[in-house]
Amino acid sequence: QVQLVESGGGLVQAGGSLRLSCVASGNIVSINAMGWYRQAPGKQREWVAIIVSGGSTNYADSVKGRFTISRDNAKNMVYLQMNSLKPEDTAVYYCNVNTVVPLGPGYRSLEVWGQGTLVTVSS
Image (tube, rainbow, N blue to C red):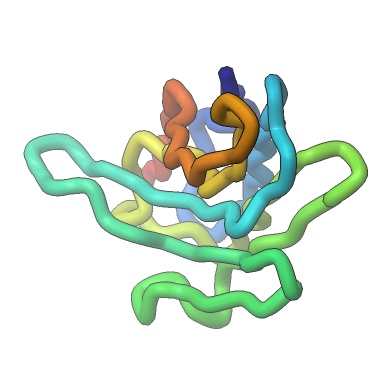
């Protein structure tokens, strides 16, 4: 019903910047929230940032002041601008969307994940 595709990952030196992009497509009625998560090797997936339909944003303490989440509602896209990158930011980054999709005569909320994009920060 809904698909997410991330892009923009790569290799960067500490102190550098990257911008991740994610586009949602499919049978979307509306989007409640879009966010980013990451998972480092051998560790659990952790939440990074979120932007809700009203435009409010929140960030994990570990990235606050360095990362910025933004959106383009018309294109169903979300971005993550990552500045002042550190080696500990190395992880696979996943886009996540909470979306409303049709269900018979009504609708339902659906949580969808992208395939992930790898960010590697060298020291």
